Image (cartoon, rainbow over all chains, first blue to last red; front, side, top):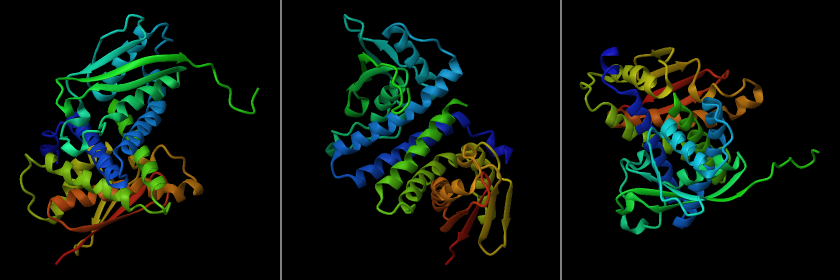
Length: 178
Length: 153
């Protein structure tokens, strides 16, 4: 038993398990929906829900203080990718107003075993990532937009995820409570 | 373990997705199938450098030890067989049930959280040449018992 266990790298297996499970989900969605855009939407939504939960774990784990500007937020997002997906995206392409930046990924663990057939060129396979960022930031009162500019799955050299600040959300009080 | 929570979240979302998307709220077939394809592919990578299993029992032991430890972070608590192709695997603190409070209402929901694993085990065994039926039974959260019935012939 231990003879074999020692040969299997737990970290690698964890990451492959996640990758394969995600792949199985995407495949299932493609069977469930005729329209690829609907799949993109569903994936984004799943990411959004996950982000809302992961941010709590992130805040508890890092005890990070409030971000005062987008550059700090970008660093936190980068840190989160390192913690949760074991990848380190590069932050770059800041807009002049410092409200928009890109995360550049050399590798994307989610797409490790993936090849897109040509008829699925509309599929945003990793939409879960942009959803995750949106969901997580919304929980800390930041509304952002997030989308893919480049994708290695579609033949680009890097995967580029763009994040744009939209507005700061007011602290919302649940209906019926004053 | 940081990746664990990511998977736990993804698993919860997959459960939600599969149940919301099917007409029947108790239809766990899709969920089981997602587990099946994952298990089928995963085991191939896991056993690449492992010596060929000499029989069915050895394969089962691999599933209950190495495989279980990697996926569920612990070994199973008990593996029993009647030697006629029926195996019972017991896990007293099953990963996907440990975050659920034990109560009768929650117990009704338990099948949702074990269906993926039924498929995962069935898929893994299938790729190792064992055709089986896997069902799960939860009597008290977070304990779970998986019944693996090998379909011979």
